[in-house]
Image (tube, rainbow, N blue to C red; front, side, top):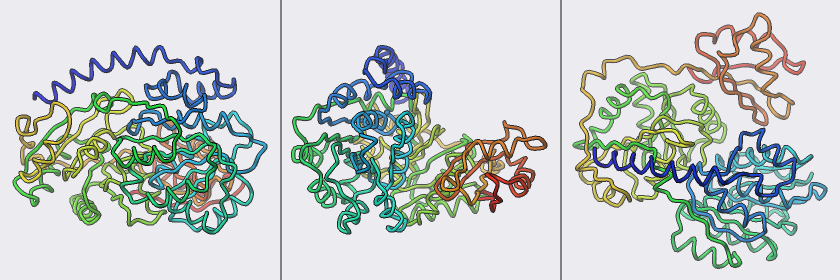
Amino acid sequence: MRARRAILRRSHRSNRQVSTQVNASDFSALGLAPGLFDNLAELGYETMTPIQAQSLPSILSGKDVIARGSTGTGKTAAFGLGLLKRIDPKLFRVQAMVLCPTRELADQVANEIRALARAIPNIKVLTISGGVPLAPQASSLAHGVHIVVGTPGRIEDHLQRETLKLEAVHTLILDEADRMLDMGFQEAIDAIVRQVPGRRQTLLFSATYPPQIQSIARRIMLDPVMVQTQTRDENAGIEQHFFPVASDRERLPALRRLLLHYQPDSVLVFCNTIKATRELAAALAKFGFHVLALHGDLEQRERDETLVQFANKSISILVATDVAARGLDIDTLDAVVNYEIAHDPDVYLHRIGRTGRAGNKGQAYALYTEKELPRLALIPGDIDPLADAEQLPPQQVVDNAVMKPAFTTLQINGGRKDKLRPGDILGALTATGGIAGRDVGKIKIADNDAFVAVKRAVLAPALRILDERRLKGRSFRIRQLSR
């Protein structure tokens, strides 16, 4: 199809262009402290991404920076290295603050900053977001932290209760600023900025640059440097497919055909409303698919467990509202489905941008009715859904068996606060008489829980081993999350 050929042509061109820039963009040129530089190598940061190469020199020199770039472009490392350069580990006061639109993104950003800070002793990073009690957060703040990462609403709560003091902040970062404004955080952001010292560095990262962002930049930034990466290049490795459906009633049968025909290991399906998300996930589950829903009405525990299972490939399908469009810490994603077309073309681009990352190829499928054609017409690029429309796979494929994910997830009721580490869990599972290392997938350690993915074929022995063997000299409760 013409649109996909054009996209793939752009992919070949842009890959060459980016490769030239990245090869010339070595972290050693930044003059980082030896510990930070060596840690980057250990973390697998070999060369800078375009947004890092363009923004880091200005960030490290202390200038205000506006950077436009989508999720997955390496922006967290850019502002993370900048704020870490200025942190005084001996001063246990909040010196840097990162504002994020969602709890998921705040957790992801905090974890990446912690990883970047491993070479600096005793750096304390605290996540402050809703969905959990205020008291433990206030207690952590009272003991002293260097960096706060959080959502505007919860940070404003702590400011009003005077459990958070910002007079020592020298670096303020607004991550996914356009998304925060879309979610109605304008007043909260203004209230927070009023309590941050005027003499500071302000970094603003945004996928788009609408008038609202321009306005807030003028009010809170001083002579900012503008950095921009091309959204078209970022999505160049994504092959897009468009499937017309006669009515809304035909969407579910069409989606079943696509899933059963292409059999993606992991696919993110976007709906426009919470109601549609719930209904679609329930319908797919009845057909035997391994699926969960992600939306704003979930409790924090439910959200965490859902994301863990999707990230470690214990479920194949995540049905989500646009709360999941940015900031999800998913390494590889085979495909994205626009079950309904987004009202905003930028949102559409961010949805499909969840696949085809880090040089990988990705698939984006869109189901649309005639009434949604005006929305598709607004999408930038050489895209013509009418000319490039495809027929759905044949009806008979719906009789195929639904593939089961290779892994299932076990939850351990102990985590970071119990001093558990991934090596403790892996060692217990693979010790003499245990299971093979290749049968263990991702391990995630949270504050109070740990999650480990194991191959379904070794579920029974894995449960037995973790139930019988002690971790850190203790016995923990084990339960299977995904079925």
